[in-house]
Length: 231
Ligand code: CTP
Ligand code: MG
Image 1 (tube, protein in one colour):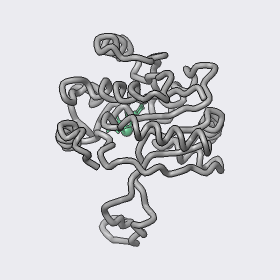
Image 2 (image 1 turned 90 degrees about the horizontal axis):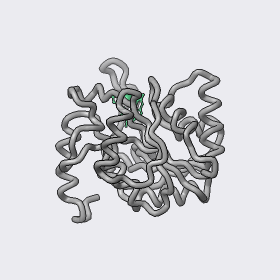
Image 3 (image 1 turned 45 degrees about the vertical axis):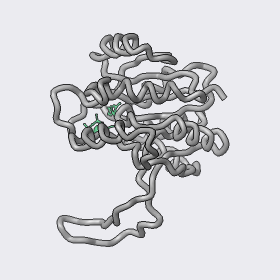
Image 4 (image 1 turned 120 degrees about the vertical axis):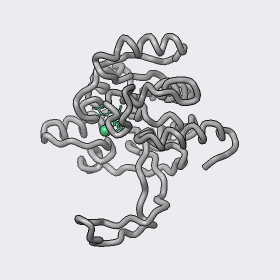
């Protein structure tokens, strides 16, 4: 199946609180976005990548990709206000022959080719799949400061990207959500809402999303430890 990855990088990185948007901050000497693209391009199952960035950054990202010699870039398109809008812009730029689509956060540069292959294989076989990891912490639901309930940890996963889908399933789920005026930061949940079952593929704890400044410190350490079988 011809396979594309939509890389969403059009966020403002507000929780990072830095002058430079987080996707352009360096990780081991290269912008986070570039590290992410290198990881995805190294995956043999990926045929083409669609990059979704802010309109103002398109030229800059084009130059960055050329400087770093990133392969498999099919298009660089402008994103939208919410993550879901950015994914929709990415869907509109897919190649005609594409049948399998993964969506990946630019802010997850530590994803491995093995994880990408695994989630693509699961989606190829079953229609929809997401990477995730079992929770380490116990989760409580809280209102104000009052604990309402303790959730059963053994049933809970933290959801990562990439998430992968048959193209028709993802397009239909996005169309449905768009018409209903909904918004979600998780593509799998749109697919679930459309009644399609999603397979959970257990990935690595190292596939963290760089969100706040402490995540960058951890990511640098994990990068240095790469190859030492950190899980
Ligand atoms: N994203 C996007 N378009 C948006 C919002 C987010 O493409 N309108 C992308 C981000 O660039 C990021 C991924 O979606 O790679 C995950 O989002 P998140 O980690 O929340 O990044 P930001 O939205 O940029 O950060 P924040 O929520 O702190 O502002
Ligand atoms: Mg966000």
